[in-house]
View (tube, rainbow, N blue to C red):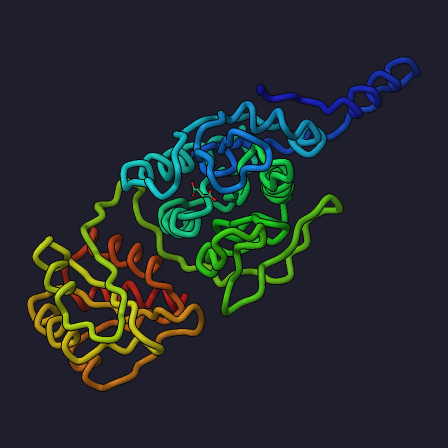
Length: 354
Ligand code: SIN
């Protein structure tokens, strides 16, 4: 779909004006580029009643846009296909390509906002990666769907329309990377997928959504506290593993992660980031050798704050409001810049207290 300078109604108005003595010129629509990466929004199932047994990342961007002809009255929309994958298979390479492409698009003067269609499974991770590697004040909005495009009650078309509504609005500028799902607008730092199958699968556990969107418009209720850290899109991403705390963790998996070459470990601990003693012993030794350990939590909400003094003495970093998967991304990016534990700590501090 190419750029269109005037909407149909604007053309009618302009024509009506020409038939009289003066011309009426309508303001051009905002220009939004839809960058498609796959996901359930581009998923296809054998029948309209199939909502689980389907393939994600099958349908192309032109078909996604054709399903929502109303989009033409909201924005002048152009589609571009970056990849077409199930987002569980997201890779570092695609992240770097995506960040580089978004940086390129927003640097041009022919686009006012960007929408990225994406699988919901890793949407929060991609949004978070982009929030650290894309530098723009233009709106950049990720959206997806919980039901495949072929489902009778598919939610993708509405989410795509809503995302374009948000990307097209000037008040969406300077809000960082946004996620729009089920009528809610979230900040990349805060959003997470909290339900496996429901259409209302996304929340910001410790915060309210930034705002809401529907056919009546876009309403922001607050502005996110944006981190000022930015890193190059082609940043190195050293290996960091997430270990999930559980009863009886004897540190075997921590040892395996270290053997596999992890430069950092995010421990998704119990409650306020607590680590079973045997696993802690392995992590203390790792920290002494320069491996960075972040304390996160397997609980779905609440910050990880300083706890047992032995964690502080060992140099473990408190993950604060970052869930394990986001703490892992920040740690990988930080370790891509420096191997110095104190410098990594400074990056976390600066990120968490903008
Ligand atoms: C995916 O993440 O690509 C599949 C699941 C989804 O989009 O909901």
